[in-house]
Length: 288
Image 1 (cartoon, helix red, strand yellow):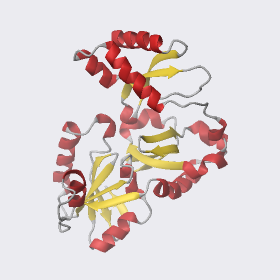
Image 2 (spheres, rainbow, N blue to C red):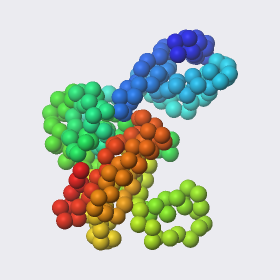
Image 3 (cartoon, helix red, strand yellow):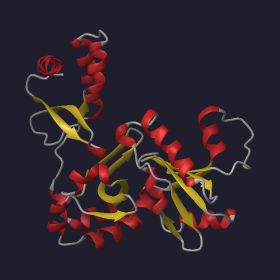
């Protein structure tokens, strides 16, 4: 991609002659690395991250650099800020405590990152933390909480977990629906629903990192009591899980399905787990 990066940087510099234009590598969930373009205009200390991988594919298919950089410019103009970000807002614990949230990721696939951030190990997963800066129809702007944040805030991971458990359901409200309802939202909005299908999708209203909703206080317990059954929890991605009625001896078969779907259908960055969990009503606990 080096030649492509050089061509993009050269063209963007023509479009923004007073800006600093650079390419960098961004490490995302599950240790996936993406190439990204940064356009830093004078007087602004924050800029959008523009991922180049899909633009590179378009270039390889024959699109010109001018066409691609026009798209990049449009994306930049849509997402850039017109003023500095006040970094002191992140240092001031009282200013951010109401926006501290959590998400769950795969433990093994994020070991390198977990060495630098506070986390809580649960099952084969890790609970990590972020500050939700902005939620809009265009997505979520957030900052990952690192170990240095806790030092600056003079706090610890247990306190952050306590705060995040209150904030996350408030800022990212849960959305639990019958599988038929979920399908009809996508494909058949006017169809009469069949609620007899005992499969449920658990996510949040933003559909981003919605699998974390399985840890919302009382959510699984209330649903299990209402339906009078334990669940298998199928980790379909970091954004949602599927609940199935629990039947002894079905886990291996379900994990084979999860493996096939993860390997063929789910992007590497969005894989949550290859394991299937069991929610026990009696223990009010998620089990491996």
